[in-house]
Length: 193
View 1 (cartoon, helix red, strand yellow):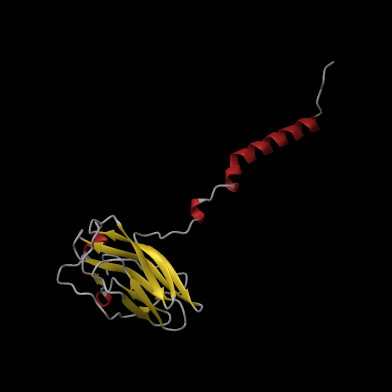
View 2: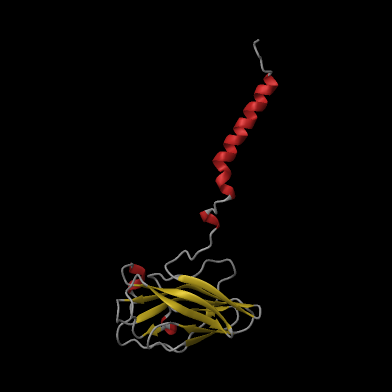
């Protein structure tokens, strides 16, 4: 006896086979996190936020520039006060000889360590460029955020101008500037600064 399938049955079978093939090919989307959805610091430095009493302080693109182990280093990055009141950020870096630095940022303004008026120098870096200084803290009042601080050198042209020399001193006063509007790009070091 010869079995002849109807056209409708053939089409239904083809649709089921096509659906199974599509699920097999794209099913990894259910268990795989797409890289474009992962948030990260798209720069050489690290970024973090500290929130206290509904007021947020952002630290962006924070890094240390140094010629090498045993040499002084300069902190680069930007601190933004996104709140409506002045806020103090204490930077507690895990570096011998470094005194914790407190930065006061007026409401809606920012401090850029790339600016000479805001120069922050670490007297002696105990690690090589390419390594990280671990166990650092950014504190706003009783709230804190831990971070690892990357060390870079002058290999990239945009950082050469920031390599400190032995006569540099750590700055203690910081000059705030108006923060960019929410959603604008974060300032980053450039050779034109």
